Image (cartoon, rainbow, N blue to C red; front, side, top):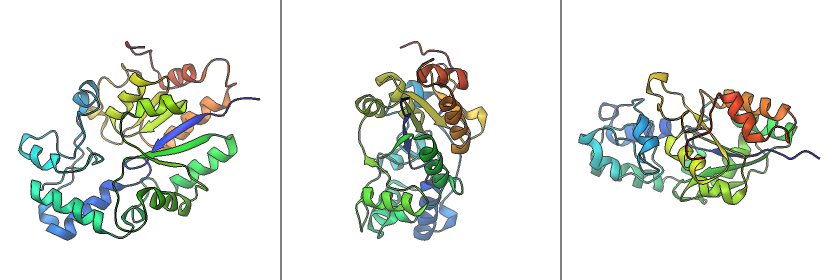
Length: 259
C-alpha cells in the first residue's frame, strides 16, 4: 500500500483573505483616507533574518515600526495599514470583539477550499490546517475555523491553532509538505524539519525573496498552482523516488546549504 501525502496548509493569506477583512474593519473604524493597502513584502530579511523578521504589517518602514509592534504575532506582512500604534491596538481590540470574526473572511481564491477538499479525498491525502489566529468573541478560533472550512466544502477539517516554529510542528507530525504565504514560516520548515515548504507568493515577482529557492523553498503564485504541483508529485510512485526529491525536481529546487 502506498503512503498518503501528509500536507499542512496555513490559513490566513493562503486560503483565507484576512488582509482584505482587516482593511475593511480599519476603514470602518478610521475612514478609508487613513488606510492604504500595499503589497510591500520584507524580501530577503524575512528569510535570512529568522522567524521573527517579518511578524507585522509595517515592519519595512521605520516610521511605522511602533505601530507594527502593536499588532498580534499573526498579523500579515502583506498589508500595511497607515495607522498609529494606538490605532493598531484599537483595530485588533475591535477585531477581537467581533462575534465569530473568523467566519466572516472570504477565500483568497474563489472555491479553493472545496478544491483542496476534493483533491485530498480523491488522492487520499492527509491534510491539516495551521493558524496562529487570536481569539475573538463567540466560538473559539479553532471552532470558527473548522466551521469556515466546512461551509466552503472541506469536510471534517483538522485545525491546529499553533505557536512556535512551523518546522518543529512539521517534524513532530511527520509532515511531507507545508504550504504557507510567509517566508519566515517556510524557513522554519526547511531548517527544523525534513518537510518541504511551498511559499504561496501572489506579489510581483520582483519582490520575491531572493534566498527562497536557494534555501530550498518552492514558490507558486496561487493555491491552485500549488495543487497542480502536489498532484504531479502524487501521480508518481510515492516510494521511488522519495516525496521530497519529487518536490525538489518539480519546483526546480536544489538542496539547501543547511541540509
